[in-house]
Image (cartoon, rainbow, N blue to C red; front, side, top):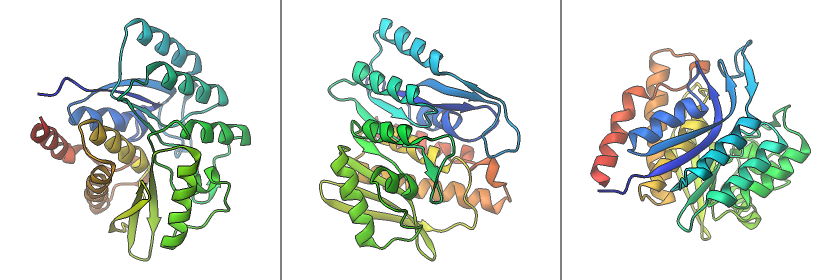
Length: 280
């Protein structure tokens, strides 16, 4: 029987959306792990919709950290997703310093942009601080847009060759992160996630679905956090997560779900509970 794992998930909370903490909670919980959430912002729904309510939670983040320290909480994994300001990046960096134990894994999803464009809310100063935050990570999970920005490279497009992928991963490793998980790399018929660790690069691919659903990256990163926490290697975690996402996306496409609704992972959560039961 495991000791009872705990993950700190730092991300925004979008109420009526399958993304960010709304995704992290069921995924991590289904793997038998206590998911302690720290919202970076509260939204009625994600920003892909034409209208949404948004409230910044920077001050609340700091109060969460103060009280968790008083409670003497410890974490097996610290997971950071969307951060909306320089101050929030600083807060997460302090949180990692204060709560990272000798065996705590740190997973940073540097949510900065997509499709070759950095989000308009992201300043150059924020990108520089995100590079510093990525340096303290055990695992970073950038997409190609974010990876190129962190590497100070021009965007290489959605379909770079293997030599370019390896160059990006080596450069990211040079920033300080121990393991690189490069997401959303495409070719004509497949989408792949790349793991680079200890000089070894491995590609895990699935058939490309005609739609790309909002929040897929959040689901993927949450899976990686949970799987490494219960003892899977990064390579095993990415292989499992790639297959899980493909199942969810295939089903979501088959039922005609809109991209803004995100991938319908609910019916596949038993795969995660079965996995954690076998892992006890």
